[in-house]
Length: 294
Image (cartoon, one colour):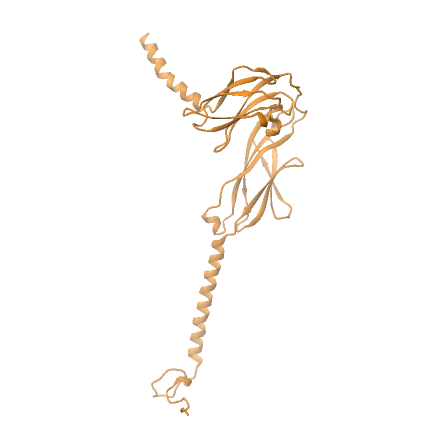
């Protein structure tokens, strides 16, 4: 009996760590609520002190927050252990069910979890047939380093959350990432994302984007799936001022060098004073050559 108790005490902390390492979780006090009712949302494994938003969304939120009852959402801050408990009013979302309770962080590293909820009395409609991908969120991540200031190729990461708006799973989709400067047409490059986006679900897709060395000015990064451009993100690339400084310094060195060469040439070709005068200055500065004063 003592051995069994010791084994339980040794394994219990490890089990708690594994549960925490699994990421944030959600639970509801009930899974079926009528419109106008309330549901108690409990969460664990979130970042301590994180500000969260709680929303009731339709269509599994594959269309982003446009499918959510945003006006009736709630906020909550997690405690020091990353837990929270909050009552949420179940308002009718603008899209039909299947519905979910969506909880996401407001600032910092993005964390989001959905859990199914049956909203009694709200229309139910299957997600559209076919496997269609739509963009829910998109942003460019990264910053320019010191080497970029001296003309190294600018780099960013295009982070996109895509949702499968159809009823069929999308496996290993092939996207095209395009970069364009100003009003020029994008130069497209095929990128294959390895993974599966089930019907009515979302996935985080990340692509590295790199421009040519010395690139600067207004650019746009686009993501295309099939024949449809899903998203276009602006990218204002700063001028590589280190290169400009280099050319300015090089110009100064060249000017100084030419000046010194010119002075040497002048020194060699200028007339010399008569021998024995002991003065090596230019003839118009030789003593005694100036006209007498009036």
